[in-house]
Image (cartoon, rainbow over all chains, first blue to last red):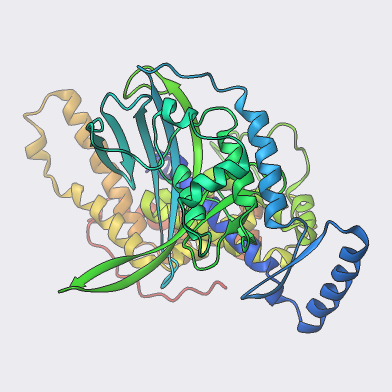
Length: 303
Length: 214
């Protein structure tokens, strides 16, 4: 055999690029794109000048706001509340396609997660699949960071807050003001509790009755202090805008252009206990993106 | 394209609905960085496959991602007169492979070790198995021979054999004249034939030569 042909045939059977690796690589590229965009890369004077120009425009247009965060001045075309309101509109429009589930069915979700460690930029990824019993009467299978949990049905004295059962969720108010009251759970000093409860709906997968997801976005839009971070990427490398609450580790990520809900972003660490004292180490940032959400008949079935 | 014997037909790299040249995409990405993702979609699989053949899938996941980040960061230095970005990307990933020379040599040596099976052991086996063993042995010999090549020669050979680049493209990728590519390929192939034609392929040369690319 010709030596060059022999070389061509060597290692001809390498496995194809997996979806996970492709997504992880895309996220890395997208991060590089965003890093370049950071205003920090621009000269101080240029930033100042654009800020002044933007302020002038804001005065004229009325709709354009100037957002500021720790990293310096940032221009945002939409305020956090406006992003959420647009997301609510989109959510209402998109919901029409999902059927009302029967009690004996399961919600299927597939979520892609990228975790980046702060120290060395190392990334890990997971694709989690979960099947959640619609009425909570049957066991559910929940995958978290690749680990599968078989959750038994809730006992009579147990309750999920907020609930995952469809029927229970259907009783929640879809009026944003009433919903916000409920999310506040009688806390008055600040709205951290309300914001946290709103995040809860998305951290553990569930299918929401028509209008509830939109109402959650509208309720969060009414929380004072929420802010945007334009330099956000979701787990699938899509350019997003994050809506967060001060000093809270979870935030929502929406598509930067369409404001469609993309996923969640969070900050975390590993914890080692020395007696009662907890030591946090290996801090990371994590983004999750929803790949699929559907109603299926049994555990293990995919749409 | 320079004629090469047995070169496989390459599928058109341009996905449907987007017939801009790579150079055009790169130029657009100077002002609109998001546009660069088009190059990723066009070449991620090719680059990954090439890296996986050289260093294994796990390293390839990382190297492929790194390749596109570096390409993105260097996109303003891209020579827009070159319509196709393939050679440029292969050049970047080959440079990255260069950082893993040791593990590449280790991988090839591990493959070469299969050649240690003696013909006597293969004899009692059924013909079909014997044929497979023999095929594995020649693959192992080949891996041993590749491990014995200098880094420069191996880069040229594998860019052409695994990356499907022609001489001109390989020259672009490595930033050397076409004549250099030809002579390196010639020496690489001579080296291969010598290693395969009798001398013990498991007696491998240590990698001592410094790479001169950059």
